[in-house]
Image 1 (cartoon, rainbow over the protein chains, first blue to last red):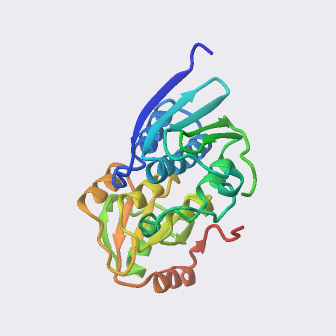
Image 2 (spheres, chains in turn purple, cyan):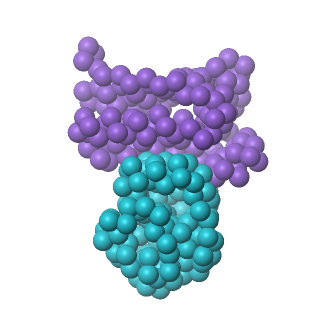
Length: 148
Length: 118
């Protein structure tokens, strides 16, 4: 699609103070574009969870948000340690986060399931030792998956 | 319930956006775990928490929450107050505990959000 608008962010790793800044910016940009609030809300939650994951697990990465005609696509790519068992990582409550991350209010093992819940489709490609690529699509006015 | 009523009930100190305390909140969520706030809050609720870091504000922002109450006399940093002010989120601090704060608001008619957690 030729007229897709893309926002690109470098997400710094291990900097918990600034974690989430890209998501805040995306939300502002989408508001300015006049996207409906329910779509913005789902994009915001999905991207914020993904951004926090990149900071705490992968040492940062790159986030791209493409505003397309029928949907918004979020691509999160990192060169972190990868996910060994994606099925296990998708289970609500499963987490490998450190105690430090948990003390900051995250790492409850709800991130990936919540990203799936808020998107209409989500694919995870991950190779241990190489990195992870997550693509989420959120349709305008679409209905996200019910439950976790 | 109006935010100004919440301020009174909790005997709280407003930290920013005092001019927006005439806004209404429909429900509330009390939690120190932002992962769960993101997973279970599904409407424009208010957040009560004892956790103090910038992610609290960003989490509230992502969910379109309009008000944050810090319990147990927790004080956010200047940067956090500025982030909330920029985004029009009313923040306040109360010396009451999370349990007591929630109890007072609930008995005053403010319901909880995310009632059914899977």
